[in-house]
Length: 233
Image (tube, rainbow, N blue to C red; front, side, top):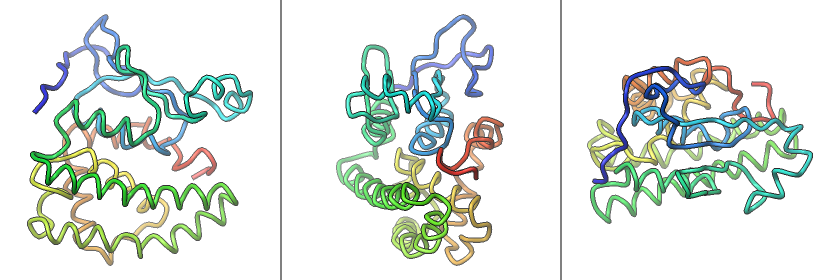
């Protein structure tokens, strides 16, 4: 397992994560003022005791085109880790998974985690497609379709220690943060929506009770971020 970056005590950054006095956060995250594709990254960093700096980009600023033209794929998020600049949210998530020892204990678990994360990416892409066409109508359709997609993850939990651990193996992984983000958003948009998925419901409670993650989820920064920059809620 790769050693994790050290974390000292000190003042709070704007993201709510503690940082050593006078030290610069090791990571910089550039994104819109929404959860979107970055909340799993934020959850991971917070839960792992990491510090990071946020550079918020409004839709108005993005629409001017200057920043977009400077981004490798014309998209956000943009992530800075020292002299390494990354684009594509899943590449960033996997990079953090490898760096912080969150990629399973062997190649078998790593392959299963890739499968889980790719399955979540399918759902995310479908959501983006629906919201881009008509945000409010797209949200309704997304919530209608989502239960059908969640059955696979309920099955995966049942196959791993009867749902008493994580999505793969017995240690938290980068994919757990992606799945938790999806489920929390679903609960926010449609309270009671996980009632038909007992293992997923218990999984949310289990992960959300991790002390650092619990503090992040209770922070104003997380609570006040909309599900998408295209939606008011």
